[in-house]
Image 1 (cartoon, rainbow, N blue to C red):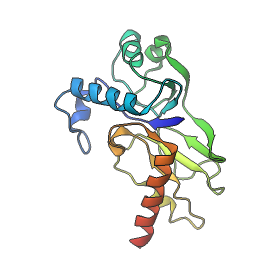
Image 2 (cartoon, rainbow, N blue to C red; image 1 turned 90 degrees about the vertical axis):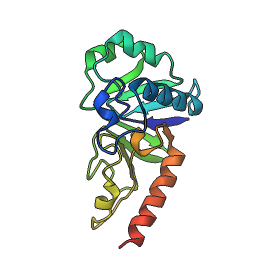
Image 3 (cartoon, rainbow, N blue to C red; image 1 turned 120 degrees about the vertical axis):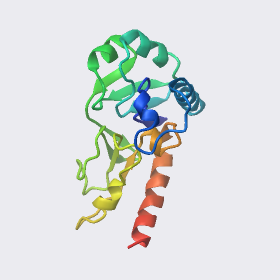
Image 4 (tube, rainbow, N blue to C red; image 1 turned 180 degrees about the horizontal axis):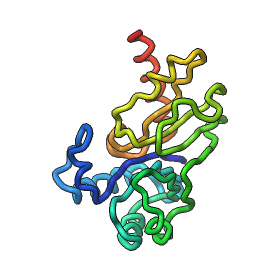
Length: 186
């Protein structure tokens, strides 16, 4: 099974109060909760696509220690806060890239840290998963205004998904609900 997540910001004190804020009393509580929620959903054989900004100012040994606690095969799509040297040296990623295209349910899925207004295969019933916005941008609201709309986009960051990774099935349900809400509000 495949799961998606982004914007953990482990060790980033400012994240507790930034944007909408997070409901944790400390960075330690946040880290413990994120790891527990990850492992409650993800099995050892699952693939997890991490769409950037996972750690903040950690060295390769600190990253490796946290990664060793997480189930699954981890793929990193880098974000604006990801410093590659410690990530590469931590030696726990299946791959590290800044852009990834996969297929899910015979549909193309574009994975980036940043939201893209119009992505590869936009006009071919594809999907775009992103992070970076911490649940503050509903990209579908804009993509549905296109002459040929595509609302198949979702922020997979933890702030937007109950602080846990989400499966593609869960994402599709969230997208469908979002599109319905947006089209009803017109």
